[in-house]
Length: 260
Image (cartoon, rainbow, N blue to C red; front, top):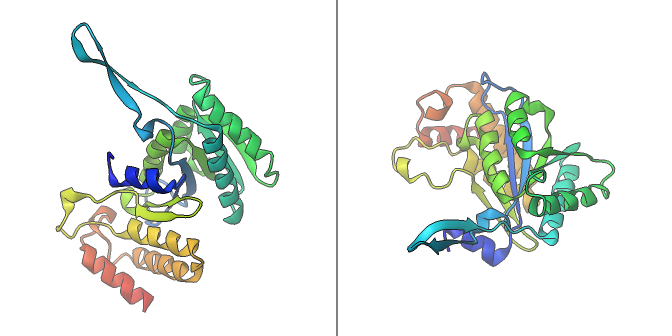
């Protein structure tokens, strides 16, 4: 397998990648951001079905990747997005796609989403071309609420959305399947800063909050979120990526004190 995450997705089928972002540090370019992206996690280009084609004596003269979209996969992630939106008080779902060009694969994803939307008359829905969606997320992110899209588009736009609220250090994620779930910070392991004490643990802690919500411990998750809000808003103990000089340990100690 290409990575541990790919191996996990193959083995346990966590088809919905849940990536919420919310403004935590005031004074940035955007205030009051509260967005949710649901990314299909098991299909599309990111599954890595690709190969070389040889020609004119060059075995690697060309490379091809296969985008796999199934009606089953598209339908279940779109249904999950609508159900998650309903359960979490969100009013609109935007399906972002490239069906104007990729008429078969992206067209099938869009078709499945339209059919699912009919089962949720209480949730507004729209579809948008993916490139226009990226532009409007930068121009006016408040026009969106929840978004759903295929694997690679979701991978790209979820990082863009993290940038709206200060970076990957604030971005949690959950990988949800029928019988299994895994929660992780979006930023990965960041080996380039290992041992330096400069990592922002907020994304990892918020991922733990998503896990607590998932297992019915919402009250505990809410306490942790409140502690994070209190420490950041107080402004005295913030990590380097928040514009201050606190180490990872100092920031974490402040969170522990806020929870006490």
